[in-house]
Image (tube, rainbow, N blue to C red; front, side):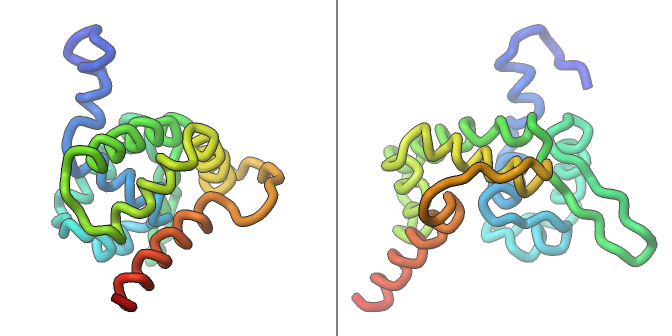
Length: 165
């Protein structure tokens, strides 16, 4: 898929510039949703099945996701490529802008706040973990809980606090 111009911003926007592509990537990255039905039913924004199917095809065609071969009656599993993993800093930057300038629920903002508080090293750690999950890379040793466990704990802590209040 050739971009309309040689501008790198245009080339990125042509692949990632619609809201659904970024939200599908968010759900694959942070929700570990890798199957069509799980992506469809897990979308808190309510993506339509035809839109999801189209965005998955676009993301595969752009080399951001791969679609595993599925035998008859089996579900195809989507995985991030290295190109897809490299979208995490973009999604992180958008989330930081959203924290600063847009309203949202404390629960859903908690993960972004943790990533911001932890900084660039945490984003690198997340990317390494995505390589383990999606590219079968060997895990890197780390002390304590992994990055996704820490994100889940941040969300759970806010959710628990809201139930107590």
